[in-house]
Length: 468
Image 1: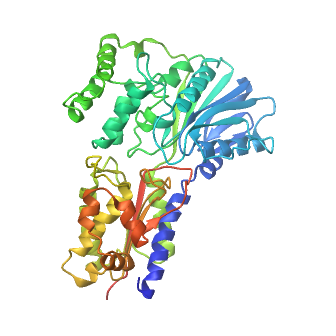
Image 2: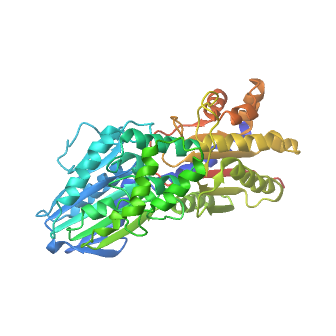
């Protein structure tokens, strides 16, 4: 990397980090919740009169939920009525909380390690935790407020297979759909139909409570509440087994999945039992932060550092990662010719079509996106672009995890290009095998933050130094 490029690299990382910091879950909850008199207030709106509440039961899960619980406990410790008992159970990744327990006497919500860090699949431990949440929700009565904390990763962390379906079958369908390019909307639509807790299951279990309030940190573009965490407290629209079957028919036309999965969905079409139980308690859902929150905060930091920015948070799944790389590279290359803007900030979530297992490498969508951008640079007609002269880009997941790796994503600049050439690395080969992790490991381009305890999809920052 050229010495003159170091400030540009530092700026790109700082702008990206500012976006992530703005959606850190403990800070968000503490900022959003207060208690004034007898009123519990969220985002300046009164959501519950605490005079008629004896218990606040907290349930939920996700990558950010442990931090959300810490923020809630902090607020309750300062402002909560002493007569009201705060308790609960949430399913979270191992490593997202201090396992030594309640050292200061102010931890009232049980954090359950439902999976190991770095994995994103349902486990038997997750099923056990989901059973505890369902039991707690069913225990709620007319003087109980149920607070549900939902964030990205909740679908895998809160498994509860429908009657007649095994955890192994749920794992099978999740793995298959993920490997074959299913976006989060498709994946979670199927999950909603195969679960006792998703698709409004927690709402049905909480039907006798005084009120059910769900606080959401959204990891799904456009914030469709029935898709975020597979909508455990969302009753409308109800799960659609017909739609789930059409997704399976599209992505598994050969019928390779266990026949029990389709059999269950056909049975649900016939019975439609999910909608038969009436819900007595009022339900409120509040989105505390989403991808646009992170993009906006990154833009504020860009202005502080003297950049003129263009930014966009995609309102829906972006599709194939190579298509997204085409779109970003065109805007980035145009900026090298006509800056300002000299800072491009975008948020979204592309999909990656994995090759067959025998050749598949390691990586995630952000590393794959960064590598695809590097390929665009290498083939550009302008020598300055080919060398990434005065150009830097960072692509990273706001949760600090990108695929089954320890990296949040990857950074590209002139030094990465130089090292890849000197090492004789074939960008096309690494892209084809989806092995971006080992490419950037060799070239020094990995961005490793560790778990951030939040999740609002992906954030990308591309900078150019204006050429006047």
